[in-house]
Every structure is written in structure tokens, then in C-alpha cells.
Length: 194
Image (cartoon, rainbow, N blue to C red; front, side, top):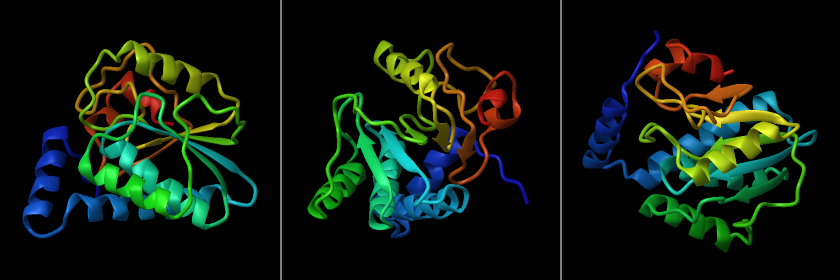
């Protein structure tokens, strides 16, 4: 069965889960573990190198968890925060755990060439148009000679409509968390999901 969720429904579901004893930290852990399973089913960790571009919110937190799983699996993986470190508590906690395991991250554009660039910049709460700092980052991602993978939805796509920013990420694949968003089926946004 196919489920389609508006951004307000995603936020409500997350809130209800927390009220019922499932903290955001655990939800993020579960999302990152699921992403790792799905992504490594498509991209062998021995054959690929990964660059995870994470934002300040929950989508970025999913990227942190994914980076940890990739590193634990022996993958070449760089975690990069182009617009600043996490601001949500669960994301901060996951980054702290990531660091206690001896893993590092970048805040300056890394001098690495990856075969898979993972977009974990913005999630369903993003508003258009994108800021100048985000546009600079998405434009850079779009120039990379790598597979572009987005988490939940490509950065620059509106969650609930077909709208998208001129600097939207053109994903080769998008791994959906929770369920589909309306923009997955509305144009022009749908064309960017891969």
C-alpha cells in the first residue's frame, strides 16, 4: 500500500511517537539504519566512496547516523556540514556519539572525490526559495561527477507541492523516510527525485 504524507502529517506523527515513548533520537537511529540497509543494497561499500552533505536539522541527523553505519562497515565516508553544525538536540546527540567513536567530520568543503554524494541537507520543513548558502551547496553538489542520492526528498523541492527552487538537487535516487511526499508525484518537482 502506498502512503502519501504532507509535511504537517510527518511532524504530527513524529510528535505522537515521542509522546508515546519513542524519542526523536531513536527515530533518527532507526531512519539512519534503514537508509544504510537500502543504500548499501544499491552501492557496495567496497566499490564506492561516500560524501554525506548534512544540514542542521533532522534530515542532517539522519545523515550523521548513516555516516556512522557506513564507517562501521568499513566504507570510505566523509561527513560534511556546509552550513553549520546540527541545531536539533537528537542530531547533536548523534554527532556526539559519532565523535566518541573516533570519527571526524568537515565544516570546510572537503577535498575528496566520492562516487556517491548523499544529500541530507533539508527535509520536509524546508521553505523555498533556498537561501544563498544552500544554493551554493546544491549547485556544487549538482556539479559533482558522482551518483547523487537524496534522503527523503531532494533539497530544493517543496514537500507538499510541485514547486522547486532553481538550484534544486537533481537526484539519481531518493530514499524515502516515513512515506511518499506529494511532491514525488507533482511536476516539476517529481522530475528531481530520480
